[in-house]
Amino acid sequence: MANEISVLSFVRGRPEDAEYVLLPFFFESKPLSDAQAPKWGMTILKAGSMRFRWNEQNKNRSKISEFFPQKEQVPIELIHSKSVVLAEKASDTEGIQADGIVTRNKNLLPTVTVADCMPIFLFDTVSQAIGVFHSGWKGTGIVAEGISLMQKEFGSNPQDIAAAIGPHIGDCCYFVDKERAEYFAATFGKKSVVINNEKNALSLTEANLFVLKNAGIKEENITIATDCTCCTKLQNGKNAFGSFRREAAFLSGNLDNEARNRKMTVQAAFCGYTS
Image 1: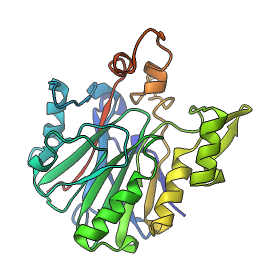
Image 2: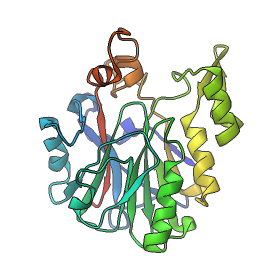
Image 3: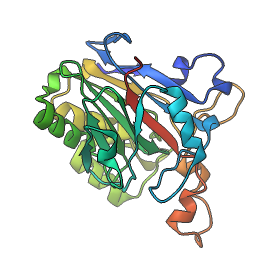
């Protein structure tokens, strides 16, 4: 079975004060130590929006460098695609629009952004390569593209790869129309669609488990965060994560998508070596 965890249980100190969290990869159902592996993680609501565009400045993103002071951040501008970029140096992603990054350079910190969409992380225990991906409903399957690129560039064997599925909107909150539900059931297996309060809801977890296992990743090497970005709350009753569905989806129809996107708290998701 895959390894299920709550991200908030890994927060150091009081979760109410935390701005980010770092977590271990699991391999053969055991957490890998800092000496063995990189960490994966993300900012949470208190850190503020980590929105990224090449033509914009966002002071909040300087916090990411504080979490990994010795690493060079490698950002990318997302377009809800299945495109993955190889980064041998930080400048390799400059000006690029895509939704995933793989690298074997331990000095780099590949970073994407998410807000209900799923962050997925990979670690090749043999080649030491890492990958981070933004997987929205349109981009479901991008992690298979990432695994394929790691095989091509690093000689990765899927059986040696640890994968982690980060916090995202759960089937408790992600209701969809019949057409999208039928597409997911046909493409990513029947388990990817659940009936919740007599409505179709998507399980991005099940959809991506389907993709990962079909790509050859062993289930005991997969970690699943059970936290829902839309409804998970801290002990003080405040929301823990940024969420498009909670913060922006209900806004006036007069707003275009770009205006809606500016209303949500985008989180940074990253993977890197801590030493």
